[in-house]
Length: 295
Ligand code: OGA
Ligand code: MN
Image 1 (cartoon, rainbow, N blue to C red):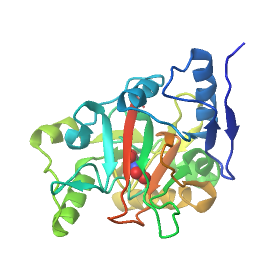
Image 2 (image 1 turned 90 degrees about the vertical axis):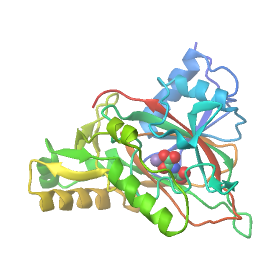
Image 3 (image 1 turned 180 degrees about the horizontal axis):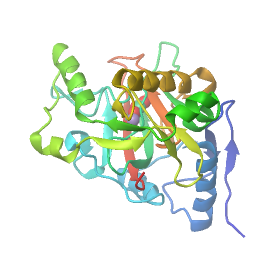
């Protein structure tokens, strides 16, 4: 008999599930984990409310899903726990303590790696609020499987077999230029780091490694070219696929509460951070990413 004791609630969206009744600071047994993983594969985004996790407990729970990555760029990793990446608008001693503008364009994490991440686990520590105490800084998730299923047959046919070039440095440098223009500070990309992230090629339509479902796998953030067709046509196809896939009917919008641990599937979804807050409204999130399998 599995010892699973959690409840699941579904939002009115093609993805997402809230799991309650679990304290993730404690060990999760294998049977319970299998049930959690099943919900994760069915719904692509899962979250647990009211958690109280140390960085080490966050990493430990993440490890159930696979190896936990140390970010390519470590400038925003926790010194005491480099697997934990800080997403935050908080400034201390004139420096951002975390990445202040993570995810402002639809994307999926580390698609620019040869072996992209399986999933990311974002833990909310401080959530910005409006004057009425309502949450700001939501994150939107779009289902790349539901979006794929609804594509017109001729587009499916055209996209099948095409491959996209994913590039890390161009979007980094675009953001760097923007930050500098606003008087902010961010590290330059070192030659060392650039060498770690050469362009990689992934299918435009990716098959999910576990569920076998087809997923749209291109983003404006990282895909700079589609191979095998005319360059302009390729970018048009990329933009069409993204516009189609991020329509409200494929989206779940998460309103954060401090204590949420939320995990998304980096193959089956894309995500977008809503930029509707500013200091003194503070946002502090910790993220881990779990290594995936070769595409
Ligand atoms: C990320 C990301 C979105 C957010 O951490 O990968 O895109 O809402 N974050 O913080
Ligand atoms: Mn992201």
